[in-house]
Length: 210
Image (cartoon, rainbow, N blue to C red):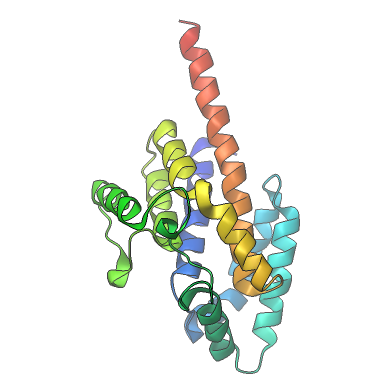
């Protein structure tokens, strides 16, 4: 795959999951998940090394969601029970609630990074929400920020707590749509982190030859 195509695919994946996890899906968004292009795009993620099993789990969960009678209301209830109640009744989607940082420190750092990238958190959403972090990563990839900048943000701001978020989601609702979505994006980010590491190592090797 060509360099530009890889950038576009990576940015699209981060942006797609950011929108999926930001708030409850409406009827229009749910309908879009049914169309052939979207289903084909989701299936195409299985070609990324390490993602095949997670994609299958996610596709099965999506199929169950789409068969529900009152699917929009039921999925909104799933979202609310998983993410919107105060912990420990639900799972916190905010980085600042996890052990690696504090709410004040993480939001302060995220606000600076968002301004640098010309972004603002939507609808007054706190800037350490997982969806905001994914949107920021999508912007960095799309703008072709340096590999080191992308790696630093992914490693120090998302991957340091994403596995805890995933594990908590799966513990509450192992086959649920949102749990499977989180599990899939975390697996992708792990692969992406390794991809960026390999690019940085290549750059280091090449620079050391001069």
